[in-house]
Image (cartoon, rainbow, N blue to C red; front, side, top):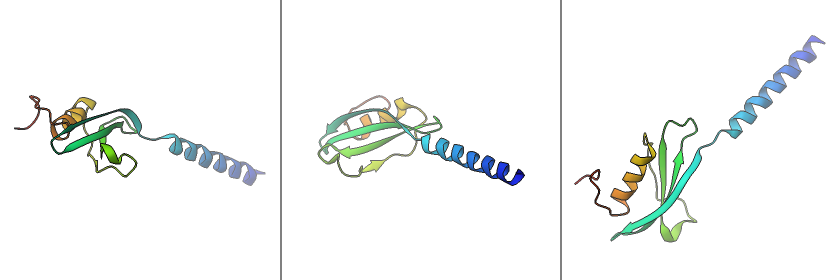
Length: 99
């Protein structure tokens, strides 16, 4: 009887941990596009599972069905991630862009 209770407890715990792990996933925050003389690009802005950062998935606009050409490292804010896209892919000349 005790063995059955322990087995049931373990199975329940494993099922709960599996369900919680499966439910945890990065969240799509937004998307957009832009371009410069090198081409037109699309991006998706994602927030990490633990909400500690943001990253971009970037595609050539004509190849969105393929794997992204770049998945950036994590940024500490969505603003910094979007500034990165604007500076390096949208061809904008913002004060935050490197010269």
